[in-house]
Length: 169
Image 1 (tube, rainbow, N blue to C red):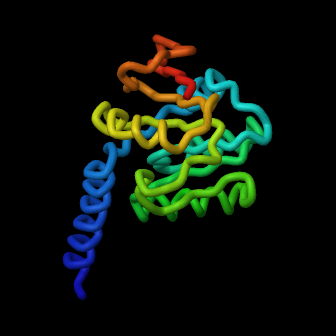
Image 2 (spheres, helix red, strand yellow):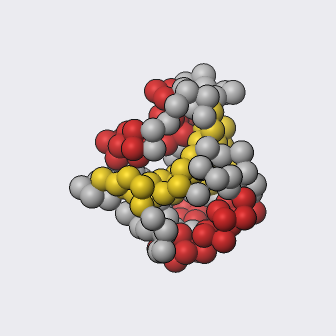
């Protein structure tokens, strides 16, 4: 196999993985660390609480939740490359047992143990999640959304500048 073929295979693989996550939820646009901190603060994450990040990308939210807020954090990521990258970061930071990432589609994962669910998805995906949240989440579970809202649900806290919204089931 020549270098040209290897480059083409790598390029096609990367583009496929990028398209894959967009088809199933949202394109990967990393949340700034400042906004990650704001999301966790506005959610009022307490030590020992269980945080889920749907479409967790490179794992920055679950890693911050585990490291600095004492949460047990779970990410769900459909892109195999970002999933592996997050597993590696968790291992390097020695956060096994505190942060975990699962490979798969969050529409098919059980969220019933969550105290807090964090999303940075598209509006259409948020709309589709409403039924899942009503069915699976316990009363009092906090949902934090970056940029996009949950129509018809009351916002209990928000930061308009950061475009971060908190809802309660």
